[in-house]
Image 1 (cartoon, rainbow, N blue to C red):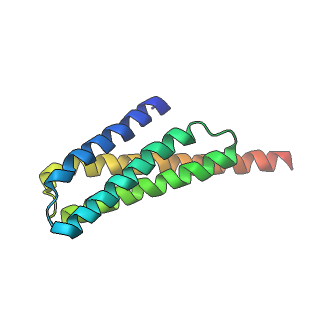
Image 2 (cartoon, rainbow, N blue to C red):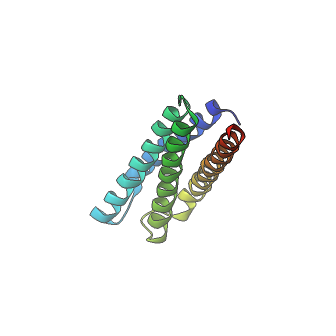
Length: 125
């Protein structure tokens, strides 16, 4: 998968989550959780675009770690909204799968970057 395809996936997830906002139940608490979810997804989307422009391996690792954290927060908040019945599972199932998939991709990317960076450092020694 290319970085452009991942950027499109994060942007698509962000749009889908924003479209859910009017349907969130639970009053003020539900609204706050939903806004937290959208903010985390927005940070993931913007963070990944910045990560793609990283100039050094250290910078990439730092940025992709933050993106993975935002992806995890997005997924967890979406799952919480579903568990609390603020959103129906029928509307969130595919979005949870997509958020989980993105989180796995970003974590794997971070782990690979760290492993490769350690190998490069060891080769210099």
